[in-house]
Image (cartoon, one colour):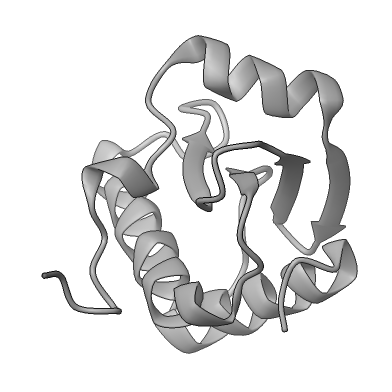
Length: 119
C-alpha cells in the first residue's frame, strides 16, 4: 500500500510517444513562465511529465531544482486532480524572482484550474 502523497513510477510520463500524444492532442495553458499541456487518456490514472529546455535554463542544477519543485507541487495536489489525464509541465523563458515551492504550487493550481482538471 502506498501513501496518497507519493510520486511513483506509474505517475510519470517517460516515453517520447507519451509526451508527443499530449503535445499533439492536448490543451495549452500558460501562466508566467509555466505552460501546462493536458490530454485525456483512458487508463484512469493521472500522470505528469516535465520538460525544461537547456536554452531557457542553462544550469543543470537549476533545471533539476525546477523538476523537483514541480514534482512536489504535483504530489501535494495529486488527490485533487481529476483522474484520467496526462499532464506535461513546460518551463519556458527565464523566470524572474525567487523560485519557491509556494510560487510554483500556486501557478500549478492556477493552470490546472484553467484546464479544468482539478476539483
